[in-house]
Every structure is written in C-alpha cells, then in structure tokens.
Image (cartoon, rainbow, N blue to C red):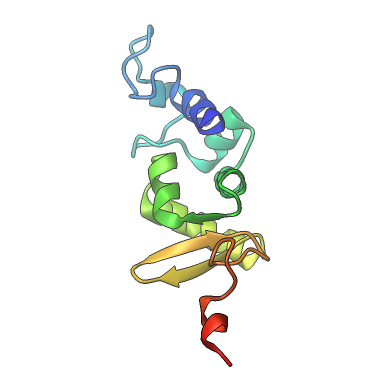
Length: 127
C-alpha cells in the first residue's frame, strides 16, 4: 500500500479527500486537476513522475503478477473506463494480459498462469 498511498498523496496532497489547502484551493486544483476534478495525464506525470499505465503495471507486479481489474479500480480510485483504457494500451504493448473470468477480468503479467500456483485445472481431468 505504500506506493499507492504515495501516489495519492502526491496527486491529491497530504489530505487524499481533496479538502481545501491553505490557499483556499482544493488539493486536486493544486495538482492541476481538470474540470472533472482529476488531474490530466500530463499533470499526473509531472506530479508523480509516472504515467497511469506505469502505476497500474507496478500495482500488478506488487500483487504477484495477477490481480482483478476491479481491484485496480478500487486501489487507484480511478474510474473503470480510465483503468480499462490504460490496461488496454498495456495489453496492446504486450506488458499485460487480460482474461475474462465470468463478469470480471483478471490482469496478468505475461507468462503468469490465470490459475495461480496450480496448473490448468482441466489437465487433471484429461487422460
């Protein structure tokens, strides 16, 4: 959680709730937020030193190379569409794989098994 906390504090200021700072502006304003209240990609890079895609990739790595996409949304506080868009770019670049599982997606680093430590469960039932 240290890395994510650091990103949130850097973008939103020490108070991650976005309350007013001493100059009467919200922490999001201080971080260069656009009208939606979220920093633009350029402002995000300037304030954190990383792109959103790099943040997502690091979070997947910290979780052992396998994480639900919904968990990334929850951990970052970003919208579903923002996370999906950046993961899509990472997937196109071969940095991650996304596998649909029911109504959610699992994000994997290349070479990771979607079944965790276990081998493919279908192999056990094959002759």
